[in-house]
Length: 233
Image (cartoon, rainbow, N blue to C red):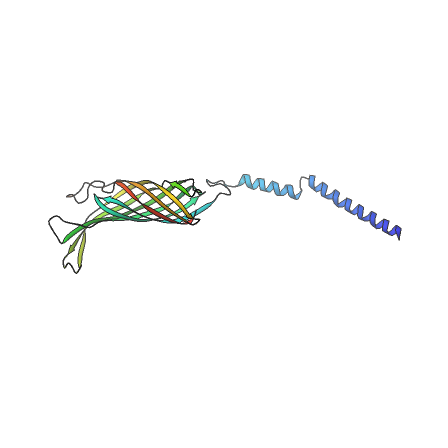
């Protein structure tokens, strides 16, 4: 009985020694699974295409709405627009933006039934660097580059006060626009931001004014307003 126990114990010791020796050889072998895996990872890392955001960096998006006050052809006007942007690593938004505007209606000096106003819109590429985006309050610098159009419309209140109105476009122009700006933003929630800021519009491409309807560069000037952004930042 004692001999059987001794033989069995010796067999187990030899088996354990053989397995240990095999693992040790694998560990130092050039073909060890762990080394092969590490080698593959290094090869994949060296062969991987590198991008501006890098590996492990955050990407997001947002849709924004903005509104503000400006002047069009020296008349008070309201701007309303939207932005759709991809956010790279929290600090740079790139996308498209569009803005519509219309001025207050104004009576002609020689008529109490005819009014006119200016309206139009523009849109194009949108780029927005964001400084300290993870702070509760931070700043951004939106820039819009694009094209647009403006029109002067005339309204006839023929049966006022019944508000039956006849209208037509008296003149119109196309233009190229560059609109840089600065905004102070508040992180209300992970998916919501609120901002206050201003932009300045630079325009080109207007023809010479015809009869004084639309002056040269009628949109040039400062715009102030607010913005709301929804998305993953």
